[in-house]
Image (cartoon, rainbow, N blue to C red; front, side):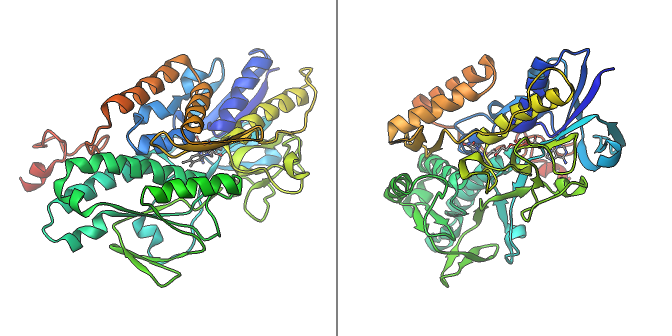
Amino acid sequence: MAWKIVIAGGGFGGLYAARTLERILPPQSARITLVNDVNFMLYTPLLPGAAAGTLEPRHVVVPLREELKHADLRLGTVVGAAPDHGRLSVRGPEGDLEELAYDHLIVALGSISRTFPIPGLAEHAIGFKTLPEAIALRNRLLRSFEIAEAMEDGREREAYLTFVFVGAGYAGVEGLAELQDFAADAIELYPRCRTSGTRFVLVEARDRIMQEIPRSLAEFATRELRGRGIEIRTGTQLEEVREDSVRLSTGETIPTRTVAWTAGVKPHPAVAELGLPLDGGGRIRVDSYLQVEGRENVWAIGDAAAVPDAAQKYQRPTPPTAQHAMRQGRTAARNVAAATGAGHRRRRFTYKTLGVFVDMGRNQAVAQTLGIRWRGPIAWFLARTYHLLLMPGMKRRTRLVIDWSIGLFFGRDASELGMLGHPPALQGQSSGGTGEEAAGD
Ligand SMILES: Cc1cc2nc3c(=O)[nH]c(=O)nc-3n(C[C@H](O)[C@H](O)[C@H](O)COP(=O)(O)OP(=O)(O)OC[C@H]3O[C@@H](n4cnc5c(N)ncnc54)[C@H](O)[C@@H]3O)c2cc1C
């Protein structure tokens, strides 16, 4: 009999779990099914590059079918589970509901942006967690430049040329820095905007940016960002977002048309529908073997799981990073193999962070690897090399090198292609695909 192993979520954790299972379990002994809502894995560390137009959006994703050998990819959304009966409920692309039976389940559903009930936030702010959001941010910047360029009054232009980022973890800082770098290039094409200049503001509730890295590196990054004219407001909270401004806890109102929300993550809501024990933050409670509390055959990894962190004496959960998720994927796969009696020994998850890279564009970065701190161009080079090596497949690595090289020598493209994938009615569309003629007909 072949074991039925189902993996819910095909991101960093799920893909690495599937690939490890494929390697260690012969196809005749296990039927592996990977369920994901899209047919690719998003390589999030490169998302800021896609937002800034340095990398083509298709070059920051990994098509799952290309990476899987004999595991089955099932496109669908996980909507629930019956752990007592070994079943996972999946809604297919056409809306049909299917019950997948499993002997072992690995949950790797990741996270979404964590928001707070701040007036106007949901209506006016853009997240920075998914590819559509990253591309929307870039398009919003270019669209704002176009609108501002047509305005006679310099004061009116101000809100369109001001960009506010809320949340200064490394993802927020990288996104802001890359986008500001892109704006500095693109504005050369807009003579009126150039005279007004752009304004970038980073708002952070805590006392310093990037709590994830040592203070000295965060201070270096702060100096670098301030040197570029970016305003950093620490110890400050967002109180309200309006269509044309934000209000901060200091009482200040900043005119802006673009607010990017990068203030942390929380587990994907589907996680709460699986009938599994959760911690106070909504993450699935697992032991250091990644086994869900009270369940012999359910495992959870990545941003969706509260995995006891060996680096903190198992007292706190591991941080939500790709480095942890992919390694947890491998460990979970080995432990599942051990549970099926395939000869592997059960292992605890003991990984401690080896390093962290924060790419700030303009050949600047900060990094810490194996206790050594790097900053400036050398850190930037290390960061790019690291992601290049981690990106699966020679084809995709080559594409990254080509994109980066083109960006270095020829600059970036400033077309706004927001309509891609959303064609207008067949009749009367413009060559840009906006379909305005169709509406007027
Ligand atoms: C902008 C940004 C930059 C980052 N940079 C870094 C970095 O430099 N280094 C680092 O270590 N970490 C980084 N991270 C964090 C890293 O991306 C996450 O920690 C990591 O992706 C977690 O892996 P995971 O497998 O738990 O979740 P994910 O990789 O998010 O995978 C979850 C998968 O589940 C799918 N899914 C979700 N819900 C459902 C559902 N209901 N049904 C079916 N499928 C579903 C999703 O589509 C996704 O494919 C960054 C994150 C962001 C947002």
